[in-house]
Amino acid sequence: MKSGFVAILGRPNAGKSTLLNALTGEKVAIVSAKPQTTRNRVAGVVEVEAHKGVHPAAQIVFVDTPGVHKPGSHLDRRMLQEVYEALETRDLVLVLMDATRKVQLEAAAVPVAAAPEAGEESQTAEAKPETPVKNNAEAEVASSRRERTNWASEDEFLFGLIRKLDCPVFLVLTKIDLVGKDQLLPLIDTLTKQFSFAQVIPVSARKRDGMDLLVRKIVETLPKGERYYPKDQYTDQPQRFMVAELIRERILVETGEEVPYAAAVVIERFEEPEPQRPRKKSAAPAKLPLTRISAVIYCERDGQKAILIGKGGSKLKEIGTGARRQIESLLGTRVYLELHVIVEPGWRESKSFVESLDWRNQLEKLAGDQVTEKPADEEE
Ligand SMILES: Nc1nc2c(ncn2[C@@H]2O[C@H](COP(=O)(O)OP(=O)(O)OP(=O)(O)O)[C@@H](O)[C@H]2O)c(=O)[nH]1
Ligand SMILES: [Mg+2]
Image (cartoon, rainbow, N blue to C red; front, side, top):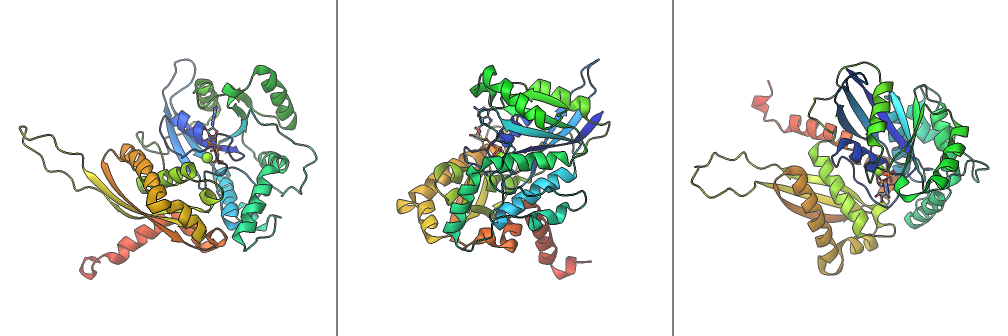
């Protein structure tokens, strides 16, 4: 058997999360047409059957990461930190390039931040040269927009990251359903001159084209090893946090301007249904059980709150209805979903708030709360 961690790296909007979902066949990560959708790294686990004479059985743990972009806020720095953390544990890296976009690798217009030296990953996101942090939320949004258009430096930055790696790196060109060969070949030529990729694989994650070849090449490259996750587990995220992401996905779809970037979702209550009692055969079919969920949508300003709520609550209702459908299909139950909007000024600049959004930290806190909630006589 083979197994290993495969980090998926790329710039925002490259199609990383779409690829993860196509490979796992599940909705592991949310997807949107807006850049910087993914904020935390998430794993999607794929079981591959043995192919006689080709490769043995394997478990591939794909790790989707936030898009690499020049950080402007604390949230951005945290997102970059997530990339470094994904790179700490990896056997192979996929660099995902959107085949429709022009890469600019020469003469970056702004200074390129240095990639981390081995062993200093944990401090690099903080220490990197970057635009000064601004307290004014509007100025910050404007500056991050400017930075997003400065693609040249981000391409350089990405290549800087992979040049430091000591594992095989595949170049995966995606969205090839949107380009012709005449566009693809010069792009491959440019990129392979920059770095010696172990494989170059064009795919279309949307059409699930090229998935088999990609998986086969990955399995060939992975080391021998046992499973990291149980056979039937397809992600490392608990359902509670996938639910929060599904709500955030609706916000990304339903709102524009800076609202999606200033929105964060935290699940406050997640009450799973009571186990159902066995029913007589003659009884009418039971309704699906009900999960009760209450979530807070944080934003940074009153104006954003007004947009999220909409006239007479219409926008929040749309977000809620859309999210509820997706959550019901994830959980396989009916769902009662309550949403509240709270203004938390400048949260993207607050280290403690940004840290508290990370689902790994929330999980630790929930486990801690359960211990302290235990009645005293149960403690021994
Ligand atoms: N036509 C086409 N569109 C794609 C393909 N893969 C992704 N997309 C679209 O590209 C956009 C971005 O996709 P995501 O998967 O969210 O990209 P990402 O790299 O995860 O983005 P961030 O999380 O923001 O870093 C979405 O609108 C996808 O539907 C593809 O193979 N073909
Ligand atoms: Mg993503």
